[in-house]
Structures are given as C-alpha cells and as structure tokens.
Image (tube, rainbow, N blue to C red; front, side, top):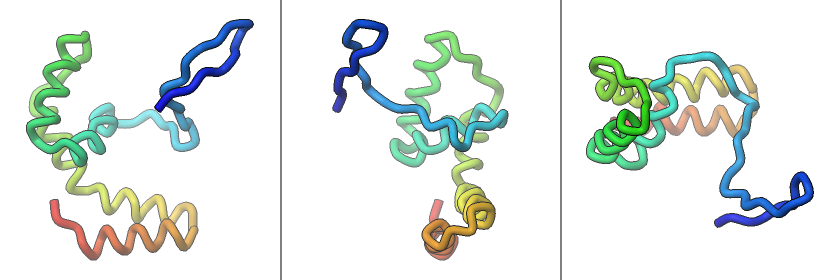
Length: 102
C-alpha cells in the first residue's frame, strides 16, 4: 500500500515510514534479523547475495551471526519490556520466552 503527499510543492509517493524512536548505533546484522524470522534460511541467503551485489558489505559468517541474533531475540524483547515497564510489552516478552522455538 502506498499513498501520496504534497511536499515541496509537488506530489510524492510514500511507500513506508521510518520510526527513529529506538535508533541506536549497534550491530548492523541486527537489521537482518526480522527478515530471517519471516523468510527463513533460504530467504536470508538470497537477501545477503542481493545485498552484496548492491554494494553492501558482508563479513565472514554473517549469515550464522544473524541466525544467532534471532535465537536471542526473546531476551532483547524482555530487556525492552523492562525498560518501558509497559504491561503489554511485558506480556509479549513472557509469551516469547515461554514459547520460544528457533
């Protein structure tokens, strides 16, 4: 889904939003974790090939690194829940920790 907005005197198509609320300087492999969760091993391999062809920098064992980050994802969600203190975040973290299966 996309829509148009008027910006700088002309119409421009919007195809997504960036949320900088949780922006940080961190491990660049982190950006690929949810993609791996959605599309699995094969999807991640394909994405990394395309990423490198487009000029992205890969490092040795990057694929394995991303997979391991996914394995630790429930802990990151739990940490986030502790920081926010929001019951909805706590509930999500409890659910992920209780039912985690990589």
